[in-house]
Length: 150
Image (cartoon, rainbow, N blue to C red; front, side, top):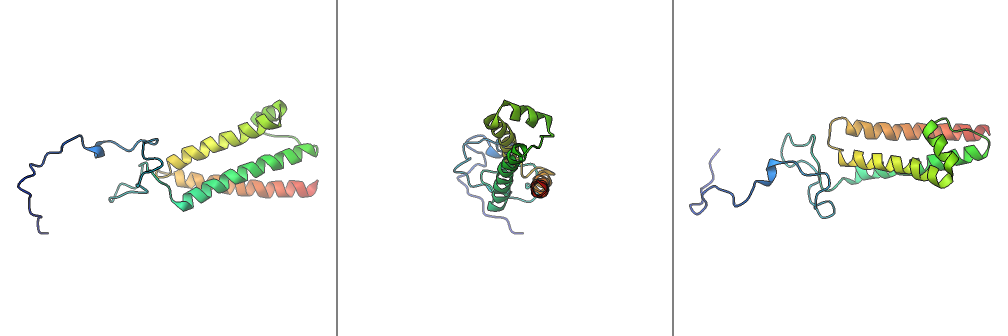
């Protein structure tokens, strides 16, 4: 491979610190205006943070959030018809009221979704995201089954 001509005016030193010495922080100043959507070089695609996320991963995460809201609504409908909440944490939340129940249920899920989104390039996180989506789809099937029995 031929070498590139060396510029005689450049002495090979950088003016500032090399920005590539450390990883991009998960909450960097480029969150809303960044350009980095993935790895630029081979071997960089794992355990890295990015500035922007693909439409596919965002659609999956929004779908999980929507299914969480539906889960909360179906749970409230089931409880209205005489059912009981099996999850002790959610049972305590529902005893505190409908608003605390929805805030705790959806809030915990949304925090988890945000964490998974930030770490989407880390090992096993994409599998976890797909697993959570699958669990919510199965849960929706369970809700449909239970509501049809009532």
